[in-house]
Amino acid sequence: MEQSKLIRVLNSLSSSDLRLFRSYITCKLFNNREIPIRLLDYLMTEFKKTKPQLQKKEVYKVIFPNTPYQERKIRDLMTYLSVPLNQFLAFQKLHKHKEDELIALCTALRERQFFKQFETTLNKVVALQQQSTTRDSDYHYRNYRLEQERYYASTQRGRALETNLIAVTHSLDISYFTNRLRQSCYMLSHQSMYKTEYDFTLVAHILEEVKRKNLLHIPAISIYYHCYLALVNPDEVHHFKSFQQQLIAHSELFPFSERKDIYLLAINIAIKRYNQGYRDIVGSLLELYQSGIDQKILLTNNILSRFTYKNIVALVSTQKRFEWGASFLNDYTPLLDAEYREVTYQYNLAKLYCEKKEYDEALKYLFLTANSDDVYINIDTKILLSRIYFEQDNFDAQMALMESFKKILNRKKEILGYHYTTYKNFLNCMYKLSLLPPFDQKERTSLFEEVTNTQPLPDKHWFLAQLGKG
Image (tube, rainbow, N blue to C red; front, side, top):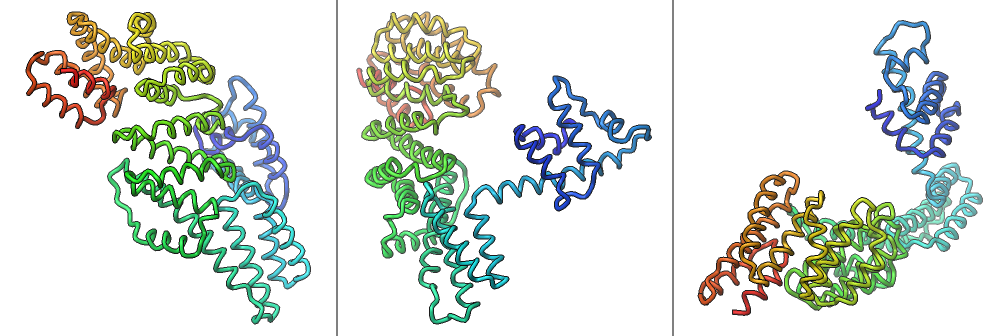
């Protein structure tokens, strides 16, 4: 029973939700059996223990004492509890927003032709909508449902000449355009990462309609409108700038989960532009990162991913924004997971020193991180060390390091996943750079072109700088 869906779902509920479910299941409207209540009481007691007894036979002894064990009987019992549990989860979702509950009430009152109560309830929903701090797609869909209810009520009351069909259509357009543009942005983002093709023919017409109907003043439309154009026209930076401006101005009009999705779309667009060599995007990218962290959008359980942390430091390092980077390390290191905090800080501080060419300071920290149990820190340390040894003409140390690098890549290939190719590319380019004949311009030019075209390649800027010296 421990691994059953029933136990997993119950374990996912908070203590308060469990108590609410206990109240729910005791209501005759939702459950007419006593036995699932006994099972729930037993499970709630066991959940509080260090080692709960959740084996089927142990549970059976408590619920059906002095009765021979029957597998079918325990399965039926679990079903009797699972059915109201699923209904409870749906009930919670349906009643999460008062507006949705009242719109459903409007429908019920209208169908029973209680039009006075219908109007009173409808006005309550309108007031709640006006007071709402969100203006997301759900908000606009509720507006459509309200106008639709008004229309149905007017036709039922025989007022066909006073219909609000224009308002119904307008609210439907806004709701649909908002959702369709949002989904199109997600589809484009997915398409860029995976070998999937989507049909965007309809979106071109939506973009035209949005402009024709002057709907860009609606944040839920304008954000995804500019995001879509930034995704399909990556070379036209003004689309991204408009997207970013809308995001910064209106992000708080969206629920947290959607706000996070929008920020990630913006960050990925900016990173793609940066990787294509457009350095004009750096300021915008750093602003998005900082804003996302400060709003806790880029945090998970109030913890900043060490990979996001590393990406930010790598960005400011390559762009020589050392003061910004030092300030970032001081301000945001405490947000890292405690397990990785010290070694992640040491490596990234070494990264800053390495880019500043303060190699003695960098080596102090790299010697601390070289034996890290974190495979990514271990390999990233080897990358920086190989760069320093190359610049210091320490050929023997560099060759020994790269042999060690090759061995760890082969040992950790499965763990590294797609990162293996990234690190393998670095090692191949470093070998070729180290063995490059110093006065062979043809070989140097050939390697420069190879490095330029190699994707993905860590520290590409450094390789190009070395090859440009000849």
